[in-house]
Amino acid sequence: MPRRPQADPAAGREGEMADAPMPVIFAGHGSPENALGSNEYSLEWKKLGRELPRPSLILCISAHWVIHEGTAVTAMRTPRTIHDFYGFPDELYAVRYPAPGSPEGAVLVRDAVRSTEVEGDYEWGLDHGTWSVLSHMYPEADIPVIQLSLNYHHPPGLHFRIGQELRPLRHRGVLILGSGNLVHNLMMLRPGAGPYPWAEDFDLTVKMLVERGDYPALVSYPDLRNAGIAHPSPEHYLPLLYTLGAAGNDAPRFFSEKIFAGSVSMRGIVFGGQTG
Image (tube, rainbow, N blue to C red; front, side):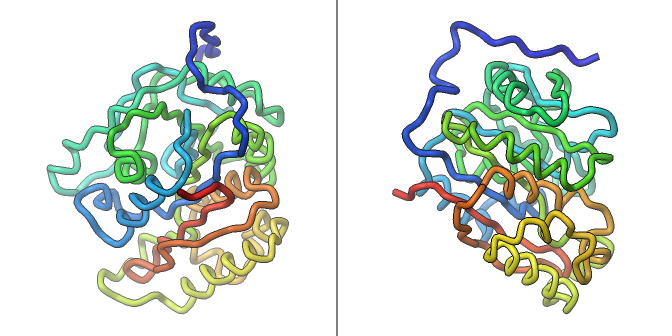
């Protein structure tokens, strides 16, 4: 049974009220190999790390932590780096992202979410949906990072509502990062190929709806054209719903607007935040 995290009265500046809210980011993380070296996607993540305000805490909702009961938030002080994939080069398994955790941040999340009970988790850590992006945004790994799980059985509207409940944390220096892909069909991958028409159609439809602020349509994404083939399973889409809920009325800015190997959208979105 997960233990409920306890606040630490000796905590530092995490959670203090900020003058301006932190941005919200959705990142199309794609292959774990994006953590290695430099490419067009990692360069965009590095740019974000330079341009956006520095957070006191990062909360990531990754497509790669899916549970079937309850909702959990990592609450350990030293999260492990999880290599949740197989068949990749040995150097990728040697990657470590030694960012500290934050029991205090886990308490902030637990107290913010009202739609479902959130329990502290002491076993998971940071999966590649988190560290493949953050290793470029914040390579020194000196900002505390926690992860919030996805519950496979929650309806899409609940994922969105939890994102709304997390929104006030942006005023406490928390950067909310959803990590998934707007199109994700690994069975249809074609290395070196251009996008399938259905993948391009779904990706552009989501972009249009985000620009319009039509969040009800995005929450009801199974009704969108080509949704079934763009997402044979929902876990890479669901992080978007958390970012939309947390974004509120903030205008979106898109980056990495490309479809990889035919069937994986690398599109990213930033909501709010001051650059500089």
